[in-house]
View (tube, rainbow, N blue to C red):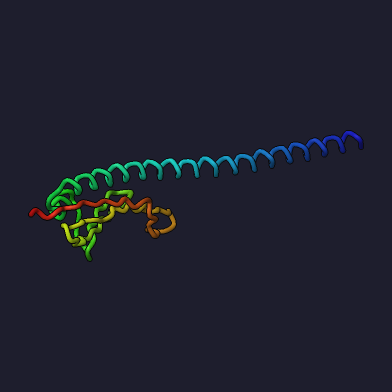
Length: 141
């Protein structure tokens, strides 16, 4: 009878150890999958920031911003220029503010990350950043 109880205790100990390792593996899988998602999002954000800075610099140096955006592949829709870049979307909005000594042309380049969920076709986008830009044109006298 004593031998049977010892083998039952051993089986229970083995079962507890297996359950512990299964729980640990579940936690590790979640940690690694969320790490992967963060890595992908970080790469997309870096790429979006580089493109947004390039566009803001080009717009600052440009005499005709609309032409510059059109050459870069942006599409004008409802007062905003948009460009789909695969994993993210860029939006450029601008306005001209007249002043006594000239014009101030200012705007923003915004980047939105496209969330992907296998269970859904597409979810709402989340904003990555907004990069402001401005250019002042003085009036020549």
